[in-house]
Image (cartoon, rainbow, N blue to C red; front, side, top):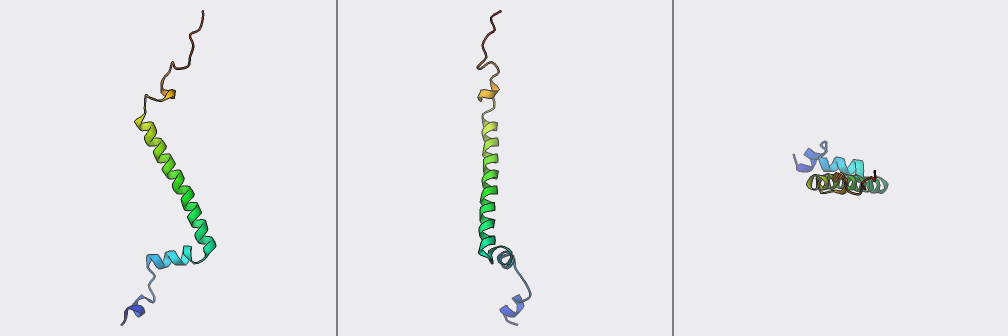
Length: 73
């Protein structure tokens, strides 16, 4: 039995990906744009949390008396 005949009934990961996403250009472009948007959101969230973790106590929001004036009583 040759290789092409054995693979006829089986669909691998890449064949399935091609059938679902990359066969039509409109679906492919939509997939790329949605993936870029979601990827950007995930990276932004991760970097923001890392920045907050590394700068605890050094941020403007963490200093309680900064920007407050003494009341004249």
